[in-house]
Image (tube, rainbow, N blue to C red; front, side, top):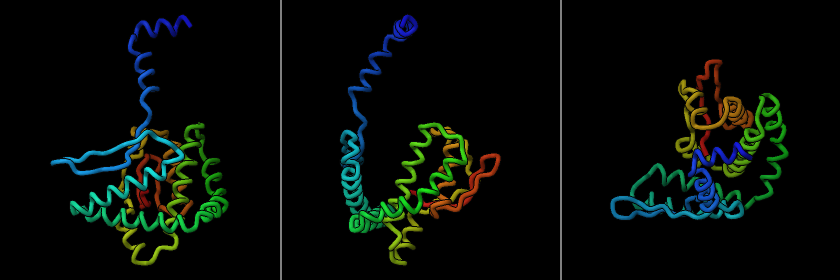
Length: 204
């Protein structure tokens, strides 16, 4: 207790900053609109029960913005995502089937690395998002798949793994994350011993 009190006396703003963090909830974007020469993003407090609703609201707003201002690539990508969500809404049970089908892939990747509890949680979230992505597009038409590849396929050309670690997350987490994409059929990525990333994967 004495050490804690001394720290607070040395850094008088510490308690105030923590109090402010508690008082200001995490905000997520829900809308975007052009104002003058710039744009304004509307936001709302993060609520896990409304995350999909907020995401859909922001994407709809972003699509209007992209259409009005001629951002063709973004318009195509958002149109694809809208179709994907409609497809997913029509078959919500498909996610449960995919969870059973790919659970072994997640467990195998987790067993391959020494991951912290936080890394495991993040990797499971990656897995859940990946399954949603698969469910959205697995029945897409050939033309839609071509556009999907154009909009969402990311190519790695000797990028450094250290850049991703600097952004956040351990080396084990990032290697496991890329391995998981490969295992789910969403990527063909290799990372050598020096941390050079090559290949392709879908971004979502």
